[in-house]
Image (cartoon, rainbow, N blue to C red; front, side, top):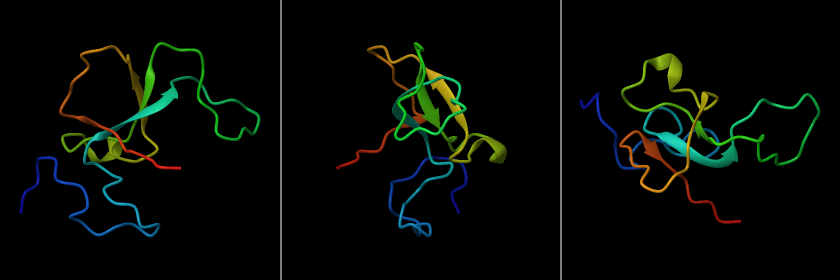
Length: 93
């Protein structure tokens, strides 16, 4: 059993919503800007005023507490950002 590396998407069973690899493969690079959550209800918010894009979840080398989808951090979106711990999802409307 391989325990400590990333893997190709879709090789494991999907979750209850039919989504694959949502925990612990690589961090997800998101379109939203990092900021505090507002206290009022919003529909499809894009984040606060920040220089950081949202990163969701953890990656395979993270401790288990950091691999949850709700885990949230940020990084700058400058040209040349390359990391083996980051990935992204392509979404079609």
